[in-house]
Image 1 (tube, rainbow, N blue to C red):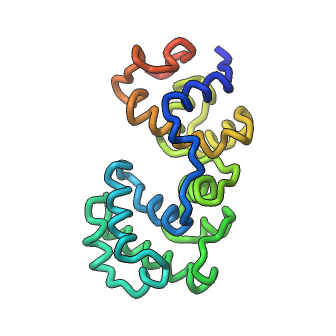
Image 2 (image 1 turned 180 degrees about the vertical axis):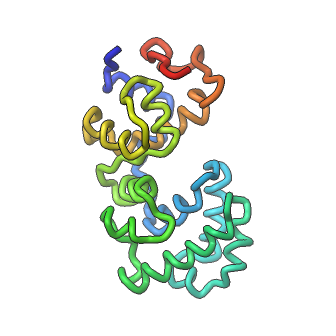
Length: 206
């Protein structure tokens, strides 16, 4: 089955209209909250990130903060002790190398601790509104289930999705498919009958 990409995106935008929003206004918040989100649900990550930024909102403040206080503020997220250390180290590097600003290119972002391609792409897409396509486990799994790609790794999925989707859609794909994966297209017992894509989905790997 060859899926109509425009129809796919139309249905997903109708289901999740918030995905068309411009994104974060603060690149530092986008970076730190995405690092915090690793192996943590969004409904846990963002309250914890907001609590952290109410206390420390700049790289300068993060560097001066005691790591134990950062740990306390973000203790609801997974691996919070490791992430607290990374937050301090990221902040230090931003001050030393980038005058306290978050860089807006992939290579520089990947040099920061705890930042892989998915995190870097999220920052580029949502903080800088660049044509970046972030692939996490949800996007990788659902892209294969929908028959859009046949890939083994998120990195391969990113490459293949960029061949299929027009650039105008790239920065929206992650949020749309993550929401679909959390709410409907779950790894086990997906809710196909209530899914907006049920009639066009080949349901691969069920």
